[in-house]
Length: 267
Image 1 (tube, rainbow, N blue to C red):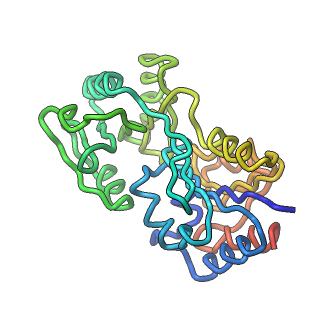
Image 2: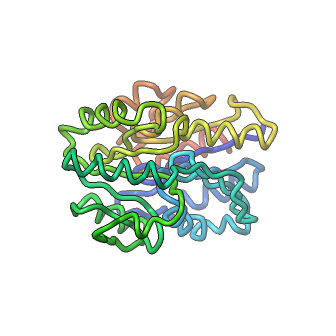
């Protein structure tokens, strides 16, 4: 029976060096040849997921990319953006201003790369590195944000992340979804958006059922898709709250856990 493998990237499909091992690539190739569907489900923006699409040659073999925590769904073979949810520019300006009040780092993906507020930290540098983008700190950030954007990212001390997330929810109410990916990131995306919604849209498009989905993840923003999937798989390196909602726990990303899942449940 055909399955959809919805797999997170950082901490799940990629190892600690941000690489996909030969064994994992071969498992992905075999599962696609067997008729299964690959969906990369990541918090990365579109520019950050496309290098992985090219590495796996999904422009040839097919598959889907769910970027921005479910805000964008892309057909990798055709390049079509099946849908894209965005935050209006006016709301982005509000978010940036409130982040400055809170004293946290804030940035979004727009224009030339990563457009950030006044603060700079190593978490922004981490995002810039994995997405292959440059960071800009203009005096007036909105001058570089000409279009609606897919998400805003707050960088916070891990010890205060829950408190900051709650402050953002109180301030912006039902206009945004506030979630965490890494312990030091607080993300703001269009209301009602998460990875589960992106996968549900793909399931409907393919005429399949949520029971046909195997989802693999390691972080807070993977919880919704693991709960949605017929089989939710947490990596051994996952946050404890992710393991709690998973149906099974596989090997870590450095032990090729995704390859293990494919070999055990799909081939």
